[in-house]
Each structure stands twice: as structure tokens, then as C-alpha cells.
Image (cartoon, rainbow, N blue to C red; front, side, top):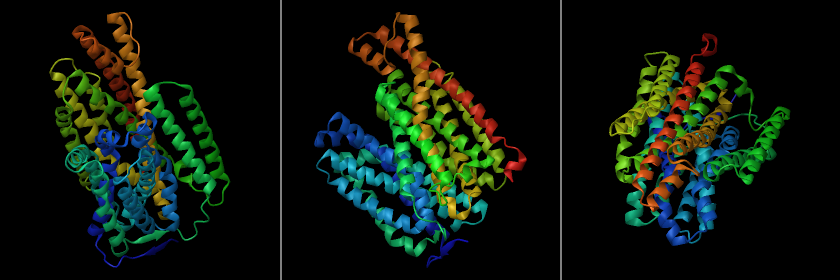
Length: 491
């Protein structure tokens, strides 16, 4: 039995809009720092370490606290958590907008990350209560993800306009009205839902979960930026060890922070692997796409962004098209087709030619990969949340988001390493030696004004891109196999 309360107004569409608006702002906030950071650094004069934390702390806190906050919502009430965290997000955003020192940005972004990590799983879990019919719930999830993906897509443009005309503080202030609206309207529009006997929150488990995920994500980011250094390896080892301790503790507790029973269900376990692996290949190849457009093809950031518009449109359209098709076709069949489309897209990455046709092939690959994941993601989310008992839906939603965060970080390491190895091998075969990454090679060729070396570095990078695309294609074949589940698991 669960504890619920009905909102004073019964309008599912209004409730969906109220849940989707904060997701739009959270998505924008994830990406907008890349636009605001140069002006912010010029005004606040941070050290290199402070600059790194200003940029990364939000993502660290989102990934590190989402599992804990998803469980907290199940315990204290999802509407209550959304209201509290929306207020905290608005207050932290207002303080960040008037920050006068780097530590203020770091502290407020950390608080915003925790608040954002709480709002998203609670919102996705409430969608199942607002739309009890599975097909309606799937459509609502598609609309919710469309808002989130739209935020990710428009963040660079919105951030650029705001910073150019009103300064970097404006990128934080834009979220305040939306969060205030959420605080005021949620008690009238959203239902409340919480577990009747959740037990006491285990703070040790929360601390172990946070420390484990933070250390692992930090280690993965450090491996991308600095390679296999001692601190990165130690952080990874300690993070994994703390994760093992966390899992063992959950098995012993009467009221665990995370109910690992859900992950033992075969259908859910398969879906979580699909989410992790698709995030891995999408996150890893996105780095190559950006460098190919700007460093190999020599496009300006604006022109490169225009070439990425088709992939943004593809993802947004597909996130609505998938649920529409789900009313007419079996979801498992749609998901399998989406994974096959993604595999085809990664195959195109492995075949991007060096000539002008490379741009067309690249855009074709991005449209297929982003469209595939855009259409499949609502089904994958519903698959995990639908297997959870209602009182654990918030925890289940947080699992999916955490898998996505870890998958992206892991993809940058794995595919980045594979691409670097292929790049060095190709460059060594043409110039006789190859040290460092392709970024170092491009900088050296540019500084030396050596067109021949620049052409060889670009060709070597394209070879690395091909290797990353080929590995991603193989990974997607594995994912395709995971989506073709036995009939018994689909029921």
C-alpha cells in the first residue's frame, strides 16, 4: 500500500507541462556553462583547478546524488521533494548570478546539481501516477524527454545570446522564474506519492554512494584529460571499492537506500545494460564529431553548430515519434529497430571519407544515431520504471539516469583511448613518430605553419574516428542482441 494525495486540479497536461519545464532548465544548465565560462573566468580570475571545478561540479553532483535523491523522493514524497528542490535551485541560481569569487560558483553549482538530481527522477516517477495507462505514460515520457533534449539543443544558442547582451550572470537567472512557478503551482497541480513505511534514511549508505560515484566519474574525466596518472587510478580503485562496500551494505539493511532487487530482474538488468552501452557510444563519439567538424574540416564553431542542427531535430522528432509508434507496434520491436538504426549510424562514422562528402556522411550518421536513441529512450525508461513497484519508481528512474551519466564518462575514456591509439599508429606510419593526442598534433602543426603535417594529423585523426566508429558499431550489435529478449521477459 502506498500513500497518495490528489491535486486540487485534475489536468494531466498541465501537470506534465509543470514537470517538463524544470527539466528544460536543468538540461540547459548542464550545457550552458561552456558558453559562459570564458567571460566568467575573465571576471572572477579562477585558478586552473577552480576553473575545472566550476565547469564539472554540476555534473559530478548530478551523477553522484541521483540514486540517493531518487530514493529520498520515494520516502518523503515526490511532490514535496520537487517543491523543496525547486526552491533550493532557484535560490542557488540567484546567488550564482551575483557571485564575486570562484568558490561561490563552485558551491552554488554543487547545490544546483543536487537539486537537479532530485527533481528529475521524482518527475519521471510521478508521470506514471499522472498517466496510469501504459500507452499514455509512454507518450508523456516522450514529451518530457523532448523538453529535456530541446534544452540540451538550444543551450549554446540561448547561452550565447544571454552572455552577449546581459552578462554571464543571466544564464543563472533565467531558471529562477520557472523554479518559482514550480514551487507555487506544484501543490495545486501535482499528486503526492510516497511509500507508507520507508524506514529511516541510512546516511552511511548515502555517503558511500556519493563518494563512490564521484570518485569513479572524477577518475574517468581525469583519464580523458591527463591520461593514466597515479591520482586518477587511485580514485578509480577507491571508488570501485566503496561501491562494493555500498552494495554489500544494502544486502544487510532491512530498509536499504537502494533496493537492488530491481536490478536482479532479468528484463531490467538487460535494459540497464542497453542504457549504459548506448550512453557509452553516444558520449564517446560525440567528442570525435565535434573535433572532425572544427579541426579536420576547419569549420568555425557557428558553422559547425549549423551542421549539427539535423541531429538535434532528429532527436527531438524521434522522441515524439517513438511513443506514437508504440501505440501501433510492439515496443520491443520498435526498440530493436532503433538500435539497428544506431548501429548503421556508427557504421557510417567508421566510413567517413576525407573529401567533401565526409560532411554528408557524418550528418547522416548523427541523424541515425540521435534519432535512434531519441525514439528508444522513452521505451527504455518505461521498461525500468514499469518493473518497479510504485513506491520504488523514483529509485528506478534514478538508476537509469545514473547509468546514462556513467556511460557517457566511460565512453569518453574507452573510445577516446581507442581513437588515440589508432591516431598515433597512423601518424607514426607517415611521419615516423607520434607523441601526445591529436589536440597536441593539431597545435604543433598550426604553430609550425606546416600544411603537410597538418594534413597528416587530420588524416590520422580521421583514422582514429574510424576506429571509434567501428568499435561503436560492434557495441551496438551487442546492444541489439540485448533488446531481442525472450518472450517470457517481455510479459
